[in-house]
Length: 74
Image 1 (cartoon, helix red, strand yellow):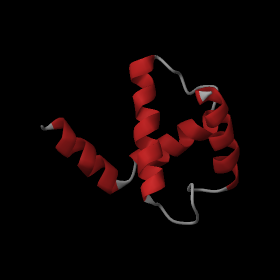
Image 2 (cartoon, one colour):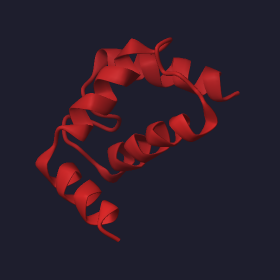
Image 3 (cartoon, helix red, strand yellow):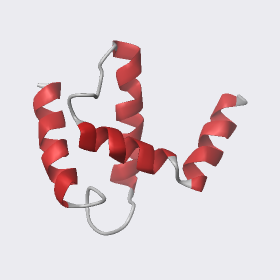
Image 4 (cartoon, one colour):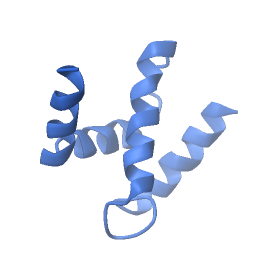
């Protein structure tokens, strides 16, 4: 079921930059988090290159980097 959802997200993000429209939203922040959880379950995202690119794009945002640094310091 998860892989079907990733297929759906791949198709969705192939047509637009963010999940819900032209701007970053809480849905994008949550998807970034969920995609990060894949490493804990040994799920490779190589099958979904658009999701990989999306994750990297979100990861490059300055606010995301600041949040990740703050989280790491806890």
